[in-house]
Length: 79
Image (cartoon, rainbow, N blue to C red; front, side):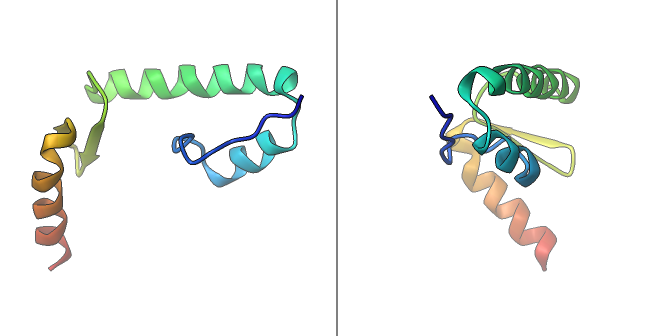
């Protein structure tokens, strides 16, 4: 059985995704667990408490209904 990754694995960087595509599911599980644990620790450190959470310049936007606030901030900083 080979592990097939989809776009839902958005937390992978390009290197990790490439490596995981070439591994069997059995071999990939320890890597996935390590990545999950590292991402969880990072989220806790940054104050994330739910999903989806977006962080831009240390400001937290929590929830799908905050995307418009995030969009406004992105426009403001890109000007």
